[in-house]
Amino acid sequence: MRAILIITIAFIFSSCLRLDDNLYNLTDKITEYKLDNYTGENDFVLDNSYQIQDSLVHLFTLSSKTSSESVATTIRAIYIGSLSKIKTDTVIMYCHGNKWHMDFYWQRAKLLAHVSGKNKYGVLMIDYRGYGLSEGKPTEDGLYADVDAALQWLKINGLSNSRLIIYGFSMGTAPACELTSKPRSMTPSKIILEAPFASADVMANDGSGINMPGSFFTNLKIDNAEEIKTISQPFCWIQGTNDNFLNINTHGEVVYKNYKGLYQEAHRIDGADHGEIPVKMGFVNYLNTLSTFIKK
Amino acid sequence: MKKNVRKRYNFLSIMQRKKNSSIFKQIPLGFFYVPICLFFFSSCTPTRFVKPLEKKQNAIAANLGGPLIHFGKAVTPIPFTSVMYGRGITKSTTVFGSLHLTSLLFGNFQTDLGVCQQLYKNDSLKFGITINPAINMVYDKWNKNFRAWPQLDFNLYKDILKQRAFIYVGLTNWFELSSTKAHNEKQTNHILINPHIGLSYNTKKWGYTIEGKFLQMNKNNKPNVVDYIGIQQHGAVGIYLNFTRRF
Figure 1 (cartoon, rainbow over the protein chains, first blue to last red):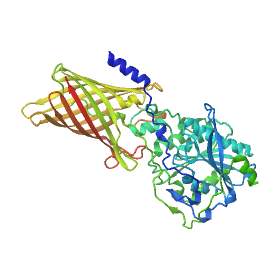
Figure 2: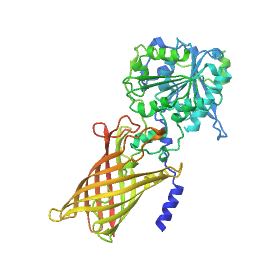
Figure 3: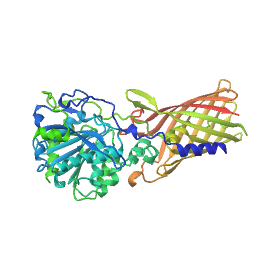
Figure 4: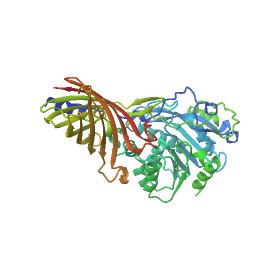
């Protein structure tokens, strides 16, 4: 009887371990953004033809606050493009993946600044709270609030919904889907998901091999596979067939299949692993694919 | 213009740029390092009782161990723990129940209830065969999800060292009865096969067991969010320890 009582009490008060915090990859600490001078690990480095002139690269801070917070968190952002043209340009809101910071994703952001031509579209990227030099600690609500803070900034600077493209890579597909499915400051006109994950349930299923729900391990509510059902904006999905982190069949294909909106296109990149898509596609092909989709 | 923007948005700096002359320089490094100790709750403890207890004998046991994963540059087992109670109903039948402590720390009540049944015993050759039908159940307090998986273990053991120890080999099988998985996708894994091998040393009151398992040998472990150490990209190798006190 005593044992049952102890177990019951332990169960009620148990909660000290969840994987939520461990899912965020913040291992590489930096003291400043080096961008082109960054010499750490990278998926690829672009040559000089992709150089962006200094006057078009803007580092700044944003204030971000979730609905449950009383104090705002300061996060870091980079805008590539002419600030005065936000009123008229198309802008790609790039939601980066789980790894480290914007220095790591700088090459990707720079590449996106060449969609449809050099600096044809503006590109905005942020470090979510806890990433890079952004303050605070990562949370799921924080991810959404931080991207929304970036969208607020774009709105203040004159961007309209019709010229906003949201692009999510890997973990960044969560805020991309969330803020397209349940818009806050702005409503993206198109959504691009590169190597999306489906949900915590799929991660648990893949990891265990059986139908184990994600709630056994994490309180994350991220569920792109369900949220995509409510998105009607044109949708472009890109994923490598050799994605060794997020299985294309259990993650990307499910997200793609669940889309019920106006227009969708899929790019399954033969042999590409999780971070290899621009390289395996070839930069020109990658840029043309995005350009065609955005102009459609 | 720039000054104005700096004022409004607290610009940090305009960066120094590296003049990189290499053309599409490739640095083949992995994209993700995910330090997550996940899953395989489906294989988190050693085989329950390889040999039945004596009639009316009781035992409590502590289990520790799990599948090996790459954790950064190191190799480590996921540290699953559980405690177990068993009682000999007859000399060939033992019932048992366990509580999974690691799972409990995650807010899940996970238990398995089962029977160890002696199927065959050869006293002269000092070996025997047992089976352990069991059911493993998990309930989480967060989303109130409940799952149950039947389990059936087979063991062939051989007494050694004048019956103070035994070695054993066997199979731990889990059965997924659900026809679907997340997002109503079709479930294709219905039997998880985990062969194991172990050594148990026993004193009058204590038992010490070390066991190795090849978890989910029939399942490709790539691609996956967890970097399991398997064999030829299948399953995961697990190491487990068990300490038993009989009374």
